[in-house]
Image (cartoon, rainbow, N blue to C red; front, side, top):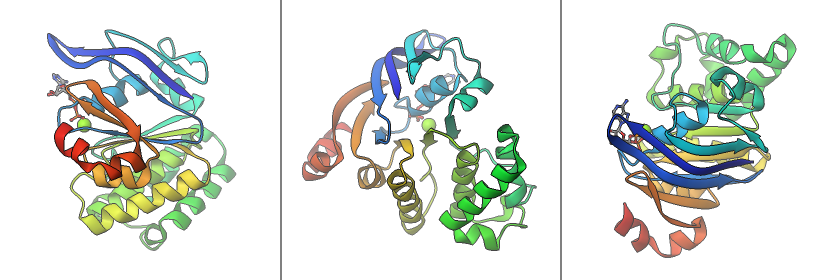
Length: 232
Ligand SMILES: Nc1ncnc2c1ncn2[C@@H]1O[C@H](COP(=O)(O)OP(=O)(O)O)[C@@H](O)[C@H]1O
Ligand SMILES: [Mg+2]
């Protein structure tokens, strides 16, 4: 579904992503695990069209992404839950979801998807009229994931959803992603948290200094945790 070849991202002289190749197949949950500064957000931004790669060929369902402007990529079905969540803190939970669903241009569909998000995260229904910025970190992340789901994506990309969250809340986010995967959604999870990623994803890329160091099935990685210790 998503195919990345030879992706290079530079900030001035600094090489953040170095001739990277990776792919995400339809219906898969793929994890990209790497420490701080490994290049995760740079890859996510390149997929979203928020940074201009120095080289690379990105295709989504066979269409070349380079010539597709950022706002059209969401129409293609690529939805990104950005690092730092990107929600509107003064607006209510439900207003955030409505805004995120705007691209659908279909009020009924927006309402339907809001209810789906509330089924996935029942606490958000209780908090629907509360300003999003006053929620706990975990609840804010649930809003961010829900916003990512609102436009009916075919590929959901998450950039470090576990950041700053307590283990119990990370577990809840992980279970929600597993549910979405079981429903057939294609997911790419970019994370520093290897435990979360291995529990959710089927296939894992280990990233360091902008390049893939290792690529394995999650269950095999879990059997050989020293690989993770060594590479991260
Ligand atoms: N706008 C920027 N200008 C300069 N360097 C940047 C910028 N954004 C990221 N970097 C650098 O690129 C590298 C990769 O960053 P990033 O993609 O954010 O990694 P990660 O998300 O894995 O932490 C880091 O060393 C970071 O300091
Ligand atoms: Mg990052």
